[in-house]
Image (cartoon, rainbow, N blue to C red; front, top):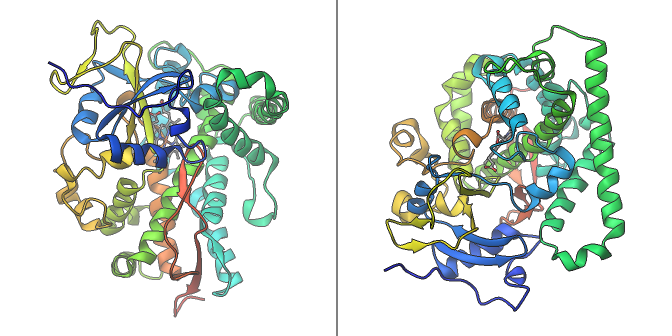
Length: 464
Ligand code: HEM
């Protein structure tokens, strides 16, 4: 005997589209999970969606022998821009396999260490900006961290400088990318009968995609015409070979993946840093402990790559931030295409899933399951993420970088960048909230960031 899966009532024909706020889909889904529990269904224009928000069911869905990533919602729309690039590819697509196998070594620990100097150089620009503007300057936290992460990923993945700290406006590539991300989200929730009325939005979407593609293709052509032996992601894509088939990536796939790295790699990491600095200011004891760690391990001298593995408390602070506020809030999966499991039954026989359903996992809820993290699961307590506890967490209890073969290829890149930025900023500055009464609010595109978070940075004594 199975248990019926609850569902909000919805409307005839339109189903549950009005139950999900297009401006803030994750908060809507989290709210519905509070009402309907760890598993519920939504009827959406794209089909039946099963929403999962507790660790036990998520753990079951992480089994790659039964399930795999499915491309749904905004990712389907993004395929118009980046096709079968790593993030938006279906798992069975050949271009994904070739790019994945070719690029995994280029995102490994040694290759990422080689990117330290470029990351450090961009970060120095941010430190100089905050130092020069002084303690009265109102820092738009998410905006400055986005400039940082964009410039870092652009230089490492595209060999291109956006110089975001030296320009007032936004680079045309970045503007086009931001517009494409917002429009992809909107399109995914638009019922099909609206589509004929969206001609001007369609045209703008096409024009923005053209800016992205023509810029990326120009870089590919330029790098082919003027080869260098620099160790970089661009060169790995241009000259690397799939170790299994010996194939090279096509020019189209390289351009798609350049844009993919920019999209997947900047907001995610800037969101992480922005939430982390919010937590530091909301939890001064954690901030002081993290700063003491920097003083003891690095002191006032230059930061070296070796320092980054010797900062256990800051590591724990980053992990705890991604547990509470994973910057990619949801991942979607479905049965493997070769699955013989029909119908799908979850929870040891408890839930019978309608044919053709896809699943979406609410990562923040899964990672705050009180059955795993206790009654203070929604509190910022970095101590629980120190190695001695972290390494004993149940399987799949901390998954901000996704699952299995479709997990984040840029995790090492993001980690080095975030550790370096945190250590260096704590070495140089003390921080305070602009509005001491600020309450965390969320801004959502493909990822989430704190909304309207402003702070002030004061140079520490002895730093000049
Ligand atoms: C995939 C999170 C940084 C590139 C993913 C996925 C998650 C994730 C959850 C799986 C998405 C899914 O299942 O649909 C994060 C977080 C980051 C981060 C939280 C920072 C804190 C980066 C960076 C890059 C990157 C810096 C590039 C340098 C990618 C790519 C994929 C991916 C290409 C698709 C992998 C594949 O399916 O083969 N990321 N990411 N990410 N991420 Fe990241």
